[in-house]
Image 1 (cartoon, rainbow, N blue to C red):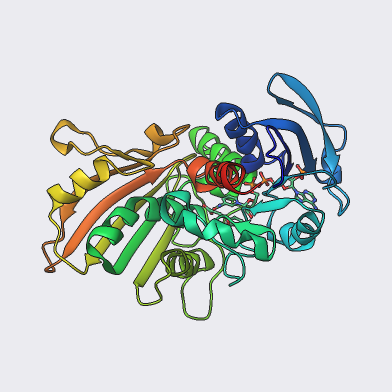
Image 2 (cartoon, rainbow, N blue to C red; image 1 turned 45 degrees about the vertical axis):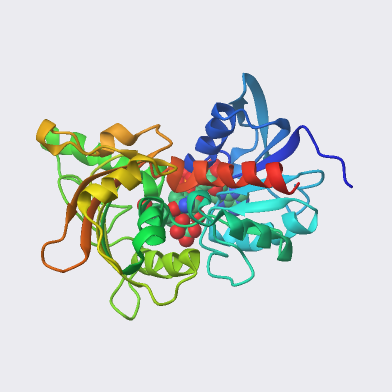
Length: 342
Ligand code: NAP
Ligand code: 3JN
C-alpha cells in the first residue's frame, strides 16, 4: 500500500484573483497540511509576490508544465483556462478541484458540495478533476439537503440577490465609483454591468439563453439536478444582481413530497452540517448579507410554511459567496481527498 503523505504540494491557479486570494486564506485558516504552495496566474502577475503563512511567495506564469510534483491543483482562473490547463494538471498527476463552469455538467466529472454529496468525490479517478458548483447552487443545497433527505423535494422556486463580488474586483470598483459619483453629483457610468448597479437591482446575471433564462439561472437548475442525482426535481430560478459587496441572499420556496412544519424544519436545520440557523424575527434576527462575510456557515432563517399550498416551505438563505460559494467548498473537497484518497 502507498504510504500516506503528511503534507501536500498544492497549486492555486488564479492566485491573484478574488477567489484565489480567498483560497489561500482558507488553506491557512483551516491549517491545510502544505509542503509547497505554488501560485499561478497570468503574465500580468509576473514579479508579484503574495503572502502565505507569513512567507512571501512569488507568483509564476501558468503553463502546461506548471504542475510537476503537484498533488492538488485548485483552479479559479475562468472556464477557458480550466478547459486548457486542468487536463494537463491531471495528466501530470495532480487532482484538480475546478471552480469554473467548464466541467460541471460533464457526466464523468463529479460536481460536489461536501455537505450534500460527498460520496460523489470518489468518481474523481475517471478524469482527475472534481468540479465546484456555482455559488448560488452551493448555498441553496446546503440549506435544502436536510429537507430533501427527510421529506423529499418536488419543486424549488428561487430568487437570488447576488453581491457584485461574484463578478470580481472590477465590479466591486464599479459599485464604489457609482456611489461616490452619485454623492458628488457626477453622472454615473456603467462598464461592467449593462446598467447602473448602485441603488438598483438588475434581473440579469450572465447572458440570456434562448429559453429566456440567464446562464446563471440555468446553472442553478442543472447543477441542482446533478448534485441531488434527481432529474425529476423541478427548479426555476430568477437571478438578480443587487448593490451589495459581499454575500449572496436567496428567497427559496420549496414544495416537499411529505408534509413538514416550519418548527420541524427549524429543528432539522439547527443541527445540520454547514448551516447556522438565524431565525428569531420578533427580535429582528434573520440572516443578513453583512453578517455572513468571512463566515464558513450558510445562514438560514425566515422559515415559514407556504400557506398557498399543502406542503410548502419558505426560507431565506445567506452565505459568503467567495467562501462557501467558491474557496471554502473547494478546500473542503481537497480536505476529503487527503483524508480518504491521496
Ligand atoms: P478575478 O478576481 O478576475 O481573478 C481572475 C484570476 O484568473 C487572476 O488570478 C488572473 O490572473 C487569473 N487569470 C486570468 N487570465 C489568466 C490566464 N490567461 N492565465 C493564467 N491566469 C489567468 O476573478 P475571480 O472573481 O477570482 O473569479 C475567477 C473564476 O473563478 C471565475 O472566472 C469563475 O470561473 C470562478 N468563480 C466561481 C464562482 C463560483 O460560483 N463557484 C464564483 C466566482 C468565481 P492575473 O491577476 O495575472 O490576471
Ligand atoms: O455572478 C456571480 O455571483 C457568480 C459568478 C460566477 C462565475 C463568474 C464568471 C464565470 C462563473 C461560475 O462560477 O459559474 C463563471 C464560470 O466559470 O462560468
